[in-house]
Length: 138
Image 1 (cartoon, rainbow, N blue to C red):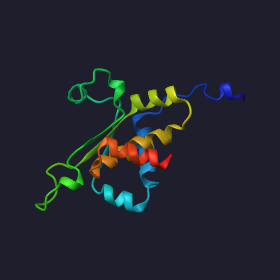
Image 2 (tube, helix red, strand yellow):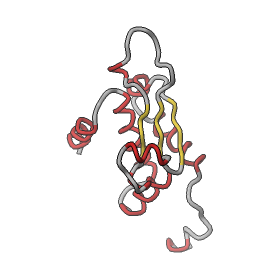
Image 3 (spheres, rainbow, N blue to C red):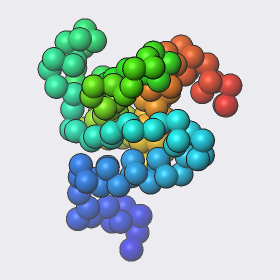
């Protein structure tokens, strides 16, 4: 079968497929990173909701591939755990869109990248710090 026919009959990865890819990406992280993530809950949705997008001043739901929601571990107090668990959202459709546009990286790599970025926020890093770390690794 030629490469051009290898995609015949295939469908886009489902939300469950994405969850499996995110779980595998998380499991592949170094143990110390996984432990630092602690009790973060992972969730996969097709898109961020309108309220979330509006909070970032975004109108296009394809602009947001992931989101950390919660109190980062550097800002928690000694009074105990946060009232609600911290969450990391991965947005399937924008990630698929980025994957298709780039064409130079595997889907599981993009999912891992977004996941690691959001875990960075959980650890208290801002976007500039995360990008500096990513640039240092290149």
